[in-house]
Image 1 (cartoon, rainbow, N blue to C red):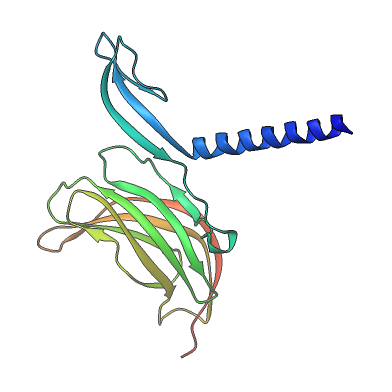
Image 2: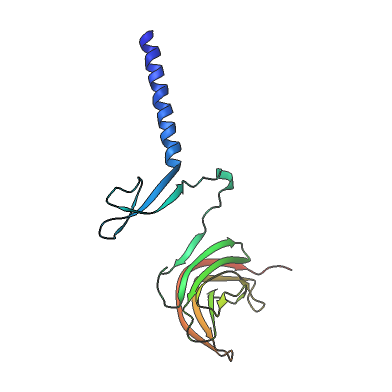
Amino acid sequence: MEWLRFEWVWRMVGIASLSVALIYNAHASIYQCKDERGKVVFKDEPCSSKESFVKQIEYKEPVLQPEEEQTPPLKVLYRGPTFGNETRFVRVSLVEETDEYVLLEVEGYFNGRPAGRMQFRSVPNMSWSYSGDVHTNKRGFVKAITRISLNSSAKAVEQSDILSLQLWHYSPENKATRFSMLSVPFKKTWKKSVK
């Protein structure tokens, strides 16, 4: 009987130690040090006597939200290069889809040349109408939501099988020039909204 009691106490001590270790790992310090050659190193313990201390970074594990509060990730229809200086689409994601419309999150990068405004169009191969332009005239990343539906000249039901990703440049005089275009698969049956 004594043996069982000792084993139970031993297990409780082990569980408590594990809990403390998990709490410790949830909040930790990272030390930025420089070695004798000037190389920067990151460690989870203080700098040694042969290293000079640069700074200490507090790191906290991200707290997970309860499952019902988590937002599901968007379905990515196109992913381009994240890094680079060329004007390009970076990502096109599906936010919402119904029979009558789709909402897309479009992200692009504009390198700022030439002067004027860059438009990032993401449109299906059918009689479309859309709102929520994705455009910029400043160098850098741009992100916006665009809504696509059938236009007034479309049939009651239309089919698409691609999204055309088009880069359009508008000069200061508002002259439009298409820079590039690529297609990504997007099969959908569209229905005209009844008003």
